[in-house]
Image 1 (spheres, helix red, strand yellow):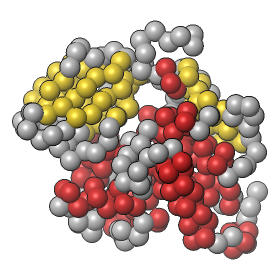
Image 2 (cartoon, one colour):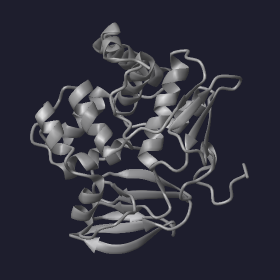
Image 3 (cartoon, helix red, strand yellow):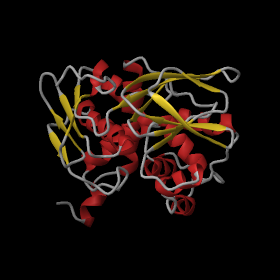
Image 4 (cartoon, helix red, strand yellow):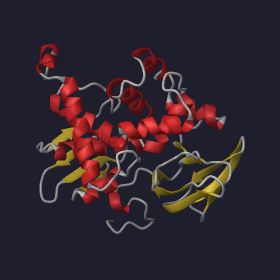
Length: 294
């Protein structure tokens, strides 16, 4: 265990910079740009890592070997799994040995272990690149100093990360919001934000897609609500229309699969991939109704 005196043994700013540089190199190596949201599971597959969801009571595990493997808890929230996968990928990128990451209150909780801090920084910059976050604010005409919890929730959905993880990244890694602003934003909870946006309290996850969303794909699971642009067109029966919310159609994912969402006048086109709730199996099969891994 590291004590307070050990915290001075490493430079957090230097480690954060190393994480950022490695995230840029990883995006370049996998032919991703430095702006757009990405699918962490596709990145791992491109790098030769096998990712599997398991019924394990932990955040995740990196298993060094041939091939290297990442094990994630199917019991964690969907966005948490995404962050944890990027965290475990960081262990691989930096040549760390096999490791087990136990449960933490939130993925962005400060870490004492330099290796853990390093891969956390890597995960944050990989999933929430500086240029991409700045673009997301700019195209919507939002100011980071006055952004609301509901607006930040939209950005978290676009990048496939948790609300709290995004707030911490904006404050600690990007310095786009002050500490006091960060504390104010963290008083809001995803559950409370969902209730505000949907007009009802629900435990079900929610993803929001607006006309500025730049993600080519968004991950969800059965039971997830999707609040879409006013003129959105949804193919097939994977998403079921629920209600109109102030001109925005609200859908709910009812079975696994991939569905295309597009708008007639706003030029938006993306795919929503739906997995079974708390899916157990290989990540590459998560959206299939019949899992060949079973």
